[in-house]
Amino acid sequence: MNLEPSFSRLDRRFGEFVERLHGSVSPGLRSAAMLVSRRRAEGHICVPVEDLPELPRTSKVIGAPGEFAPLVLDRSRLYLRRYWEYEQQLARAIRDRTAAKSPKQNRKISDQQQLAATNAVTRNFSVITGGPGTGKTHTVMAILRLLREQAGGEGLKIALAAPTGKAAARLTESLRAGAQQHEATTLHRLLGTIPDSPYFRHNAERPLTADVVIVDEASMIDLALMAKLVDAVPLTSRLILLGDRDQLASVEAGNVLADICHAAESAEADAPLRDAVVELRRNYRFAETGGIYTVSTAVNAGDADATVAALREASDDEVGWRGLPPAPNLTGALRERIVGGFRSYLEAADPSAALTQLAQFRILCAVRHGPFGVENLNALAEEILADAGLLTARTGWYRGRPVIITRNDYNLQLFNGDSGIILPDSEAGGELRAFFLSAEGKLRRFLPPRLPLHETAFALTVHKSQGSEFDRVLLMLPDHDGPVLTRELLYTAITRARSGVELWANEEVLRAAVLRRTVRTSGLRDALGVTQ
Image (cartoon, rainbow, N blue to C red; front, side):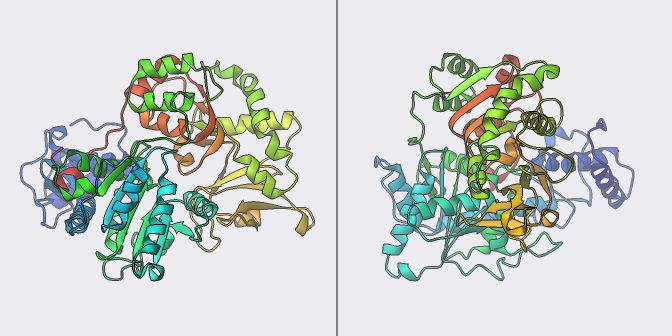
């Protein structure tokens, strides 16, 4: 097998370690171990054996299911042992939960939200999937009302969570707007993070005390975290997952929500898993003739011709499309968009208003590096806004700098995905502070040096934008094709916009992205009893 240059140092060290355990020189085994390690970093759970032609037929470092070995060969797939265990643990927990007898729901009723809510409160495991605007949050409110109406419902312990602080805050805000006094938290906080450990305080031996656990933005949850979550929820409690199966897969390994939904679709008509999943299809936010709905639907279907046609024929203000300017001309091309998009928050009267206005517009990028990536776009935004007299950009902290948290800090209650602004604090003699809004809408202020890891946030990667929404989005694709450009990335970016999205992309790159589907290898569907 060719030792590809894309193998990392960790991949190579792991391959060497496995070969030493094997006890003799085995280039095929070393290469297989390296590839399993690299594929996991790319988001895959396992490697099909057909990709490993030199894999030894027998070795003490390759175990069958249930055997103790660093690699596991199961159903013609090679796994890192830990990820095979995560997959089996999750599948076993879902099978056990769906095996419990539940009332059969009439899936032909017209109100899909009613079906999803009733389904969720009558079984111990359920999934509600649907795109933005299909009423997932409204369905959560219906679930909470139904739970209260049940006998003993007022005494139920209900936990709400999401993968990121931003997503948890949005869920809390939406529920409060609907007169629901519940507060969501991050999954890591719910499960109880142990410093410097991949494990949590809550697990099968020390489960959560909640009677109902509702988790939003489940598409962002990787295999390892999902396995630990399901393990920590008592079998007698209800676990309800909500998310958009068509969004980007998790940053870490796995595509769990999509795998569960696909397994349910492929299951026999009377299979318990099939009834556990409800998809909301009616969109209440976007008109079916509107640009965002039309374009996102075409992208999601993988129809490049329909996507290009919808962008060209859009007659409303919801979508726009233009080709990429040459990189040297990017500053001039962006000037009007950036000044117009960010002026309102930079001229806001107070930090609360500035934070509200910052959510009106954002630049989203597919990549971090290069002229059309996040790093360059943030630098250009600083330059353009400084030239317009709206900020004085300098290294480090400056008035008006938007920031996004990239690592959870449970002491400060700042979480990955939280957005804030550096502004003068009138209560501190005009000294700079980092301002954030809590889930309850209260203003929070921090000394900038105390912030956990963070980045400037005029521009965000599409991955970082998950769990957020903006009134208008400028989506920038790179000037060349690449594996990161997929229909899921485009769909996720377009549906971050509430009222308008402008796409800057060359047609060839756009078409390639629409045609490319995210494929992550796993055995979860087989483990759930459904053949892929």
